[in-house]
Length: 62
Image (cartoon, rainbow, N blue to C red; front, side, top):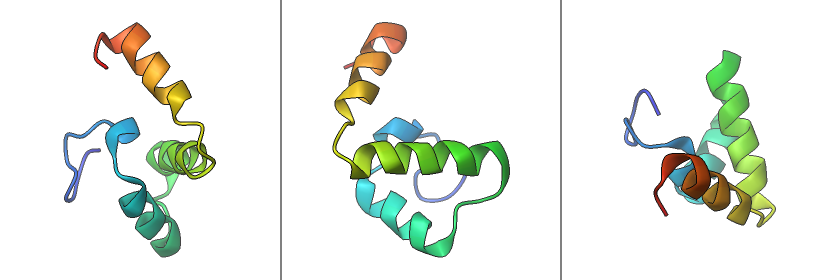
C-alpha cells in the first residue's frame, strides 16, 4: 500500500476491516483501486488461502 495507515503493507496483508471501509468509501482509481478491489473480493469470499499460497511460493514468506 503506497499511502495511509497501512503504508508499505502488502495488499494481501491488509485487514479485511480496512478493505471493507475502503470499499464503502470507494477504491482509488486506476491500477491500485483494481488491485484493492480484487483483494477485497478474494478475502470477503473466504478464499484468501490462494493469496497465502502465492505469497509463499513467490515471496518466500508465510
